[in-house]
Amino acid sequence: MSYYDILIVGAGHAGAQAAIALRQMGFDGSVGMIGDEKDPPYERPPLSKEYFAGDKGFDRLLIRPAAFWAERNIAMLLGRRVRSVDPVGRFVTVGDEEIGYGKLIWCTGGSPRMLTCKGADAHNVHAVRRRDDVDAMMAKLDSVTHVTIIGGGYIGLEAAAVLSKLGKQVVLLEAQDRVLARVAGEDLSRFYEGEHRAHGVDRRTGAQIDHIDATDGRATAVLMQDGERIDTDMIIVGIGIIPETGPLIAAGAAGGNGVDVDEYCRTSLPDIYAVGDCASHANRFAGGAQMRLESVQNANDQAKVAVAHIMEKPAAYDAVPWFWSNQYDLKLQTVGISAGFDQTILRGDPASRSFSIVYLKGGKVIALDCVNAVKDYVQGRAHVVAAATLDPAQLADASIPLKEVGLG
Image 1: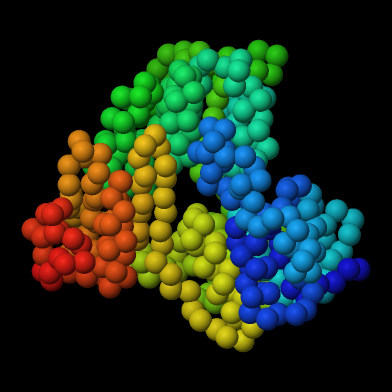
Image 2: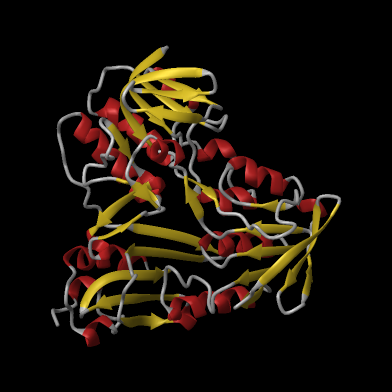
């Protein structure tokens, strides 16, 4: 049986940051990283944006050059998948091999949630989660004219922006009554709906799919519950992810929607940590609610928290969440978590394509969505961290810098 003092399962942002942090903090024991893709750790957010558009080659997505890992004596066990975890024997099973560990950091992220209707398994129905997903789509684009995107979240909207710029005819189907319904208020949703409409995207909300027509394993149309037929050459599904926690839950770890962790990213199993998209934690920026955060920020920050605890320098996780999305010439930057807001304040004019939306709960600032408004994003962060109660009239006055807004 091979053995590592620290075994990292997952070679995405969280796994890469955990390995980097271990060496940066002076850990000199053996470190192994298991990843089920053939590539070393790479950035995933550009997959639906710059990489899909052909503006950024894969080498520029690498979190570190391939040689980096060998130079720091981090064993890369790529193209492998953990089948089971034995927390008593302290080993994982990969294929027919058992790999022992002193401490385990679980960083497996999630798998795309796919459709389950008839025809959903056609070979031209794609997700956007891995390099191979996007490579498969890019290889077909020359023969594609009509694309149907299912899901009006960030992945779906970013893919729609790329495809419309490439001259494809795009229909975007969202089951809810507006895009971005799970992550933003109505003002932002309507703004992005208008932008996509202006770029030729046929955006439809309240859209209920019945099934997919397929011929010889190839999807040819999406059939709606109202009987409409939408002919298509390719389908992209962006309806969320399912956290990859099966082996840990089967081993007895507490969890449901993700594996539960404490403020130091410890699971309920001894010497096993979980970080990133798969980890469910109590987040004070969501009022202490238990939640998973699907973001690079969360992956990196939780990885550092887990490593600090391993190195006996504990610091509880308390990072302010932030996210971003690039669509057309629009850069959206979000700080905080807007879920549960009871008031919004608009700063600036959406028609100028540079504005911010401030989200309040009980009069306190809990989040901002900033579109082409970097100063608001940077200055608003402190107000989110402080849960500040600010003067509403000054908040709404875009001529007053956020750092100068007075208390309410």
